[in-house]
Every structure is written in structure tokens, then in C-alpha cells.
Image (cartoon, rainbow over all chains, first blue to last red; front, side, top):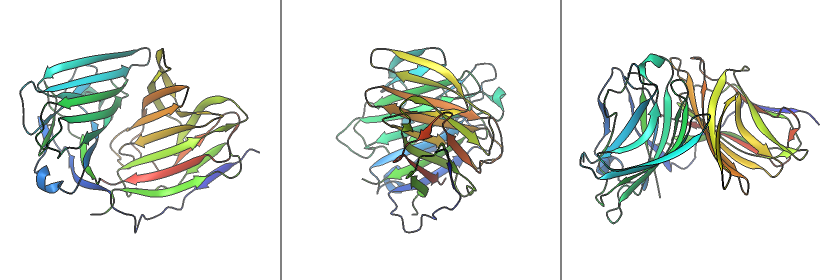
Length: 187
Length: 154
């Protein structure tokens, strides 16, 4: 039997339990060096984990893609590490960055790509725990600059509760139109 | 605070069909997530076709691990994979309601005993997405396959 199903009547979601909540969204109106979500010790006090969902573009004019990095609690020392597995349409590669001033977690397009944006979904696990170093995981990719898909993990060598998260590019600005949304997950 | 991820629609297929469409999607949310666990009949495997707003225009790259080897390739108007034993696909459609961006998408999928994979796509249009259609070129989604659509606020 050949057939099809079509749905155009949707639930409003009313009454659903709120275990995944929006904390804040930043839509970049003009290019900026970084985006910071701060006061997480109060704004995110009721959550177990955090998630970032974003679409992003960098101000690089000539590089094929732009790399997005993350810092926590304003720490700029070489306290971070990242590992990645990435595909570019023809091959798969992996690598590690240790003793870094931030965690590379995302791929964006460049500012020559106009309407084209990369995307990333990042989980920040047990962000408020004071007995654990902090880890993140990211699914990211961009189609429009170099065309990549990647899985990243990140490590912050600190047991301090995360009270702020800063997203930046090491050598250029974040382009206007980029969007960063932070969510809290209850546990 | 309100739940930021809302289940908009879900179905479990009770008789075989070769396509599932979510239409008249409201622009209320910022992102969409589609989770589908799909098998196919007759036995076999193939990519899952994808249409946005009734047309084509989605391109992307994927990477996959097969246990002892890896691979990466390109795809057009395909956003998942299906086998006779069923595969879970999770597709995030970012900024679907924005009218100043092409739509980036991220996909995770895999089959136990077969492979693990991820992919990135871009639908090359600034129009808001109002419908998405998943289909099999030859064969049907099997009975028991399920499709769920979620809206994510921002």
C-alpha cells in the first residue's frame, strides 16, 4: 500500500511540565567580540544542566569558515581542552587541542556568506557542581563556507560552579544576525 | 517559566505509508526538532527524502562510523536513513521561522549494529518553513514507525 500521512493540527503544549526552559536569547544586531551569559548562579539556580542552541556567522572575509570558542567564569588561562571528530564531505578526521585558553566547540560561516549560518547545539553538564571539572559536548556544522559536520567535546579544568559562559571567536568578531539561546534543564 | 520545547504533533504509523508531512507549521517557535524512529518495508535500506514547503533545495554533508572505518559524503534533499530494523533520526531545524536566513539543520542518526552518524544541512531559502515532508523513494515506512515534531522557543 502506498499512502501518505499529513498533519496540520498541532498541540499548544499547554499543561506540559516545564523541564526545559529558556533562560535568555541574544540576537546580534551589530558585530561584537563576544557574547556572555552571566549571573548563572542566580538565573540558572534551579537547573541541573544547560544547553546552548545557536546559529552563527563570523566576520572573517576570506577564511572559508569561522571557529567559535567558549570560556567559563571569565577564565582566560590555559585551563581548557577540546577534542573533535569532523567530516567535510569527502573524509573524516579527528584532533585534540589541550592547554588552551578556551574550548573550540562550533563551526560558523564567514561574513561573505550573507544569509548562510552555521549551527551548534551544546550541552554543558553539571554546570553548578563543585566536585567535578566541567565538560561540554557539541553537535555543530555549517553548509555554505567550507561545509563541515562535527562532534566536539570540551573540558574546563575547574570544579568551580559555572556562573558565566562567554562565546567568542579568537581572531575576529561575531557577525550580526547570529543568534545564541541558553536553556536550563531540570534534573 | 513555560516549557521551551513543546510537542506539536506525533504519530505512530498503523498502516504502511511512503511519506509523512507536517504541514501548516505555525511560526510561533524559533527552532523545530523532528524525532523519528522509522523502519521500512519491504526489507532493505535507503536514504530518507526531504522536502521543505513542498520543494527541494536542501544540501549537506554527513560523517559516519561503521565500527572499523569511517566515511563522509554529500547529500541533497536527504535527511536521514531507514532500514528494515529501524533507525532513530533526530533532526534540528534551526531558525525555521526566520525570514532573513537560510535554514541550517543538524542531524544525528544511527543503527545498532550498523553505524553511527551525524550530518549538517542548509535549506537555501529565507522563507519561513511551514511544512516538512519525509518520504521513501521506493517502499514504505513500516507499521510502528513514529514521527514527532517539537517546537523550541527562543
